[in-house]
Length: 188
Image (cartoon, rainbow, N blue to C red; front, side, top):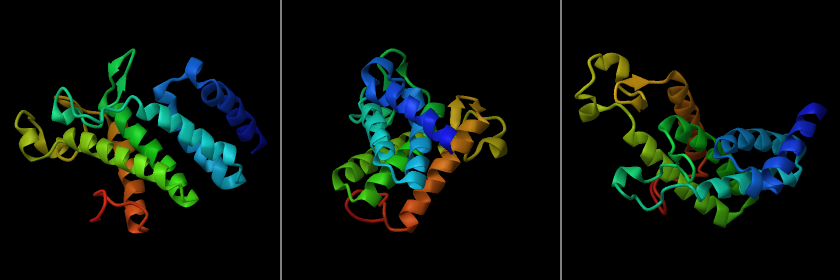
């Protein structure tokens, strides 16, 4: 445990305290998961704060305006790399569920609302990339593709599907325990 704490404390300094110099969107979900678990174990609020700082910075890169096309809503747009692929967005959603859960447990309504809305945007984006019904018209092996998360027009990556499963499983748990609503302001 001491090694885990020492390592994460190093990364807190590198990626949270010096976020302007060292920000990398691809590290956000992984550190969110690690920091959330350390917070759960130690109760040290610096780990929860780290999750918030990283995710709030990442949310600056999320397309919340649905332009240039409506199906861009929820996608991540890195200022240097352009639009990030769905294989990253599923991991971002998984990491964001940890930030949401921490905000909910803390009673931080503002962050809970923001993270919740951004999870809904990401869910819409991921569902747009799912091979279902009319989206399968060009697939030659429908039984092997149906329900999968599209990596490209003809391919599915197993890690993308696995992280989508993990993210949606966590969301299902949040809905089941009453802490998250799939539709903002009402129905579940």
